[in-house]
Length: 463
Ligand code: HEM
Image (tube, rainbow, N blue to C red; front, side):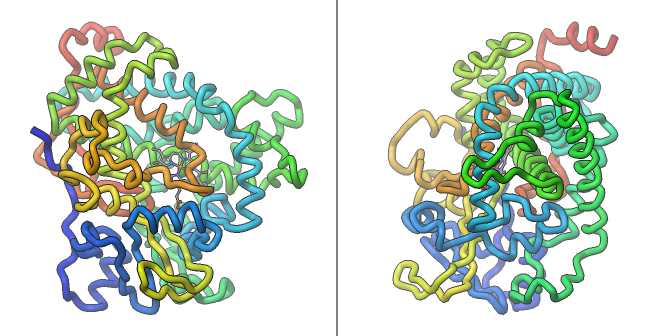
């Protein structure tokens, strides 16, 4: 029998403005009413601001694809992320964004295949680390998957593994940044000009500095290697040397740190979030877990890229995880000009929210929307598997350039872990919260043991 995937409580109807603002700034999920899981569109009343959440697939297509130019990334987003990401591609718009994307697209071309060996080496190291903790005591899986995903992107960018010490710094800094820098800054919501002081959280600023210092050192060291002709052929070299064919522009050092920062953030936070929820869902459903484990036994050691074609069911489980826990829960856009949604006037400057979180659990679009049912991806019957209501990587011109990378990484890591480990839930049920990515309020704790017959491997590794 399919199991219900944990979902946060919705806000009670009729609570006061102050309580709503506080909820909105701390966690977007619990600040929203349950009716958003049924509505085609809703006007969300945030003080000082008109905002519209769109759930109807045709409206979502309009915002992300057909009229994408009229709905640029929201100013609120760039305001929140600037201390960490500067002018990185995630939050820029118009010509600045186009020029960045024209460099990133060719630099990234072919990268998923090259990255396979980085993924497999980082996966192997992560399995060995987890064997040390596979004694049945609860293990915090968000840290495990963050270390793993950061290691993968670090190796792909810079051709070196991430040390345990750096991984701990990165994990803590990103987590604290997200906790202390609310996605909704009041000056940004009020649309105050950039010169008005933001009074950003000092703690968030400190954490952003730690991460940027680390990345600046890596970029500096790589520039020296590029100048000396000794740089490895990896993503960082590619990003730093690719020239925009139209303008002849290439990233300056400051721009480069911004872009490396977003690759590092987007490339590991999202995958870490997806993997930690995937392991939780598998722990919840023993039958599904055993099926993934059986498929995983087909992987060679080390795994070969072609073997991923055989991981059909693991792919379905990954899709179902992305449906229930889309790592980027909401996409924020601004309406450039006045327009209309379903006959309702939308004034220029309104915020438009596309929410995969609500769309992918929508009661009118999905059968049993809150159930973990990977088998739904094997049928194609109407509401069971709804392709146009599934956008974990976004869509249109701003679609995630790392989607291929993220999919390979997700399936490969699940298979490598399930080949070796069995996961069981503890009494702690994780509560999803919407930070930059969907995380669990107090972590995801699972008991980890070795699958039958693997004790000898464990002994060899411990020795
Ligand atoms: C499971 C893994 C991932 C998921 C679910 C995911 C999801 C997304 C989504 C939804 C967006 C667009 C957000 C919006 O429209 O507001 C995005 C953008 C982006 N992602 Fe990913 N991502 C993943 C992995 C990666 C990886 C591995 C990389 C790089 C190695 C990456 C790099 C980026 C970049 C650079 C952008 C900004 C693109 C632009 O604005 O033009 N992502 N991602």
